[in-house]
Length: 124
Image 1 (cartoon, rainbow, N blue to C red):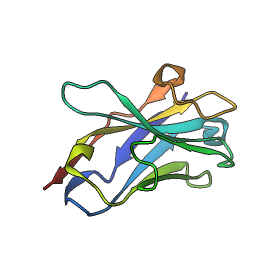
Image 2 (cartoon, rainbow, N blue to C red):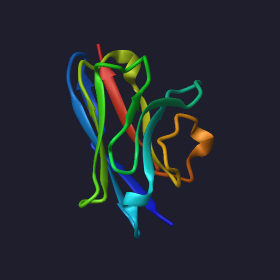
Image 3 (cartoon, rainbow, N blue to C red):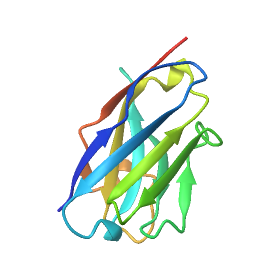
Image 4 (cartoon, one colour):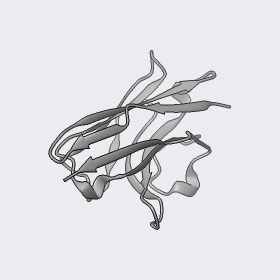
């Protein structure tokens, strides 16, 4: 089992940047593919990015491609989401998730563990 804690959210102006972190506790972090999702009020949870266990493969949603970058440091049991050129429509609660999977899923149902989320608000 793994527990996930996100951090790094906050209020930022449009065009700014934030880096979200997700720290995992428990053993064998390197055995999990990791993903980032977000959910805005009144909307469904949206896939953003995923990374395989060894970081050899990453997947980005079209909505954030070229602006958001996922990475991981298995020595620190942490996955990151670097967010650049933020827009007001990026405002949401951001979640990281872990999947017991050889690949990095884009479907939220494939993830086994979730963090509590961190709020990102982008002002215009």
